[in-house]
Image (cartoon, rainbow, N blue to C red; front, side, top):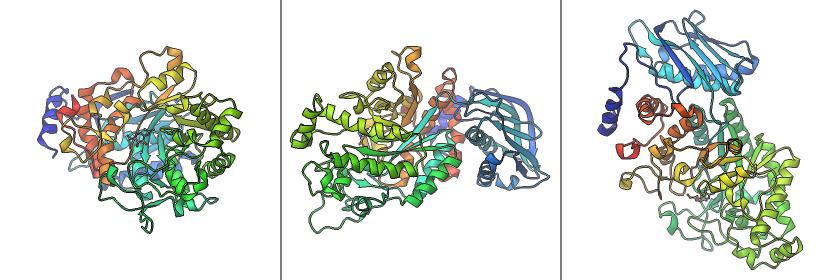
Length: 536
Ligand code: TNX
């Protein structure tokens, strides 16, 4: 079914699998422990899902709906006389996202929390999706699984500014995160090329900032800025109602959404909406691609800090997430060097330089978020000029920012470009792929990534919460290409983050990939087909 190269690789690894008449189930990410009894369970009169826990009502309906989306759906319809699927909370399970799944004569799924149950449901769906249909019914292997994640933070990011993805796609993307037993969606909502979240107090952010001149036909770096009189027709944004709906949708799937408002750089769309946010009250257009004319807001005006406090207030009302991401990356300081107000503040506050000014600025927002019971995350540039007291750092320019933060006793999320940037090519034969950012991150590279950097002591390593795959969308002009870039690299990352380190085994992963890709393709996801060069 897949091109010959993948088939050959599969065959090679299939030869190493133990022979048995009941196929071994192939779960991704690999569970902590899985014991197949050799016996099977026949499902031929449907199933009945029940739970004693009010908290699991939505998990029950999620499982029912997902079963009916499988190719084996006809065996899995609701019937009180069918195989019983009993799901329940169990305080005896130690890990907060842990679950136990037993398939015997009936099916029993227990989780410490509703999120643990969701992960167990994903495993059960993979098992059912691989079950063989016979004339008698669906033949499901009997087994027991004990499972829990290695890292608490297992994330995927999506930049909806450079390319706008509608609410329906965002939900499909969240489904994908849940299918991988990941638990965090980092939603990059603002950038130079578009502001995508409705803020009631500042309506121009979406009336003006969500739209740019449509140059989708030109390459990203060759898109001219808006000329006077030209209409901005490309873009879109999410209303607060849509956001609430998406947040609830994600929560039902065990996914927390971390919103990002990128400050003080990457802000051309905000400045295009409210020129007074810039140092020189500059009238600029929303960037259409490549570089923005001006992308940094003023570091010397109190009104700018007030503006962001007001924006963050609405953001906190929409997102229950403990973490709020304030960006902080690539905030080029030329504007601040020339700005009297910025220079005045540097002197007044006895700051060292413009980096000190950025730290001062970010610290105000850190204090504000903490006073509202939230925690701040920023890209690793927030280390420069002094790290805000309570901040968690996302290390993207390699691992050094992450190492430094952990050594300072700050939490860290690893997203180093060489392993976690899914906007890069995934195959050395780049011509096989749609145009991408000019880097290479193969499936193998992702699979062999170790989120805890070697130099850390055991104490310091505890600050590494996990890792995240980043999806910058300059070179992802469609839903199909976004899926193609994410898959199957996020599949590899999900195993890095979930499974015990000792169980990581690349040939074994590759052998489990085929049924997983089947599952994705049945759910209408597009994906890259790994070639041997991308694997080894
Ligand atoms: C750097 S990674 C950026 C993004 C770009 C990306 C392209 C980061 C924090 N900032 O704005 O989209 O490179 O790979």
